[in-house]
Length: 86
Image (cartoon, rainbow, N blue to C red):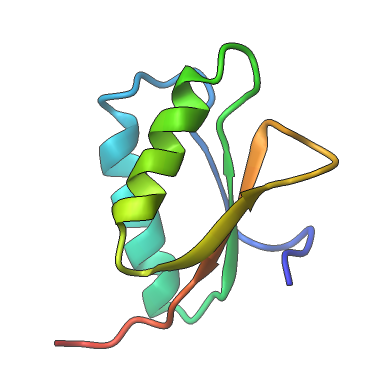
């Protein structure tokens, strides 16, 4: 369950190119730490950044599922898989 003390990455204001690096590291680190839910703040203006974040989340093998927060459309809630060394 996503709670107010769950880890959150704020990429609002970043470019679609730089968000790749922040997002990958954030997802990997939190999966290793055993955090099941995290939040990604992308803003809600033109949806360009949100679409890029969702595109990256779809491709990430550590992401179980994600959805836009119904009370804040500028936030995506992500459910992570627990990291396993390969």
